[in-house]
Length: 573
Image (cartoon, rainbow, N blue to C red):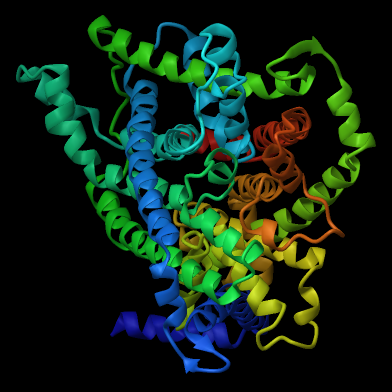
């Protein structure tokens, strides 16, 4: 009864607050129009024909194509192997960081840097490197090993590149899980005579199993939704994302593309629902709270040596891949003439409108980032701190974009805003403008910021905000003066994450960008497809410098202007 009265009181407070009610209404409209509506149009276009009405002929026609069936098989094969390899490598790096005493600080720092490199770089940079290192004119294959006919394109090329791209996601997940395991359980097993491998197999691994499943599904979803890497290094090995793209840009079959997009969407949605509502909860139930005390790091050479060697091998491979990019922009002709030159950087700005591409990308991302960060914090605040009927709707829809492949979302926006019910009016005018690109950036980055905000807000005692309400402050005042300052680290982190994700985005915007806007990632993709690796690497090098500069700036701001000293002292105490 008391709980019911409390919920009723919360709802009355909410309805009496016009600012909060207006915010909720605007959020629901935004999420409905820019996430649910494009997907609904996509679904309708896949089963509706002007001449025949409701029909499943587009699905039937798609499945009759051997190329489409092959694309589904290829996508699932790559996704499964990438999920397995990414999970294994991510667990290796996380285990070494949390459990193993690495011999030097340099090695420990190197492992951390390498595990974060792909997170803040364009999604297809490693594809460029893979071709330049192991292709027919590759440094390693042709010039070191004397192999002239090596084919890096296809299944293994996509798999290796995607694994190197996505394993940091698993690393970050496992790092948190491993830190939450109480070391006393493992030490008790050791005291009873178990070997290191025995402890890992009987204690650590069972506790991590839900997390392993969670990490596998996350990278599986990322892999099958990836467009840029298969487009550059896939060759004739078609995946669903590239097949859908070619269906709408090459065959001009919008209904067929919509049907194919729905198939890909169903696969990712099923995996997302399993990951979100089953494995994520099971992981949280298995590992609760924090470790009771510091862990004694493993110093046995029988453990540290092989694990360090494995991590070092992966780290050197990733470093080699990234070093290849700036050198690719400095050599006159990759694979033939290795004379150093700045001609490609000069052509970026003189011949290929590089200044406009960087300006457009930077401005659009800079507009999207603060809006995304603020929206994420508002949604997180409503989900964690408020009680109202449509709270679940806001949470689920805001996270839905995580399960929607960029190519699918792009087609949904084309069909929804170049036609659909918005044939006239303001929303129809969005198509082909910078505004729609900003909206796509916001929608794509919203789930990441929302998850971070929810985690941060759940650590804040409700009584802090209640005190402000009791003193007469409104919801807007409480949010801006109490809640937001307490979660400003998450806000700043979300701000830079949104900026990095926006400026390196490709899959959703490649279908929406018009000649009026030049975006860096689209330029890199275009030149890479043409085989103009010098120009592509020059664009990619500058883009990497921008993203890394953003991350360094974020770390500086959080360090000097983030959580106050008093709060840090209380946390440490």
